[in-house]
Amino acid sequence: MKKIQELWNQAVDENGSTMSKLMAINPGTARHNHVRARWKKHSDLEAWQQLIAKAIKSDFLNGR
Image (cartoon, rainbow, N blue to C red; front, side, top):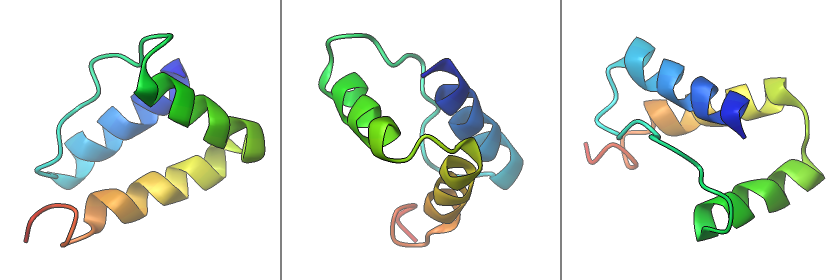
């Protein structure tokens, strides 16, 4: 989980996204459960990095 958080925050910094940084993915939260479920199906960090890059660059998700 920590690596995914780091990938997200790095992408936000590098791309000037309006999206918020992740402060934490705390165990037992909905966010943690959702990320963990996706990780079980797709545990390749490169795939996560590509997904995060697409989200960060999305005009729709950034409210543009």
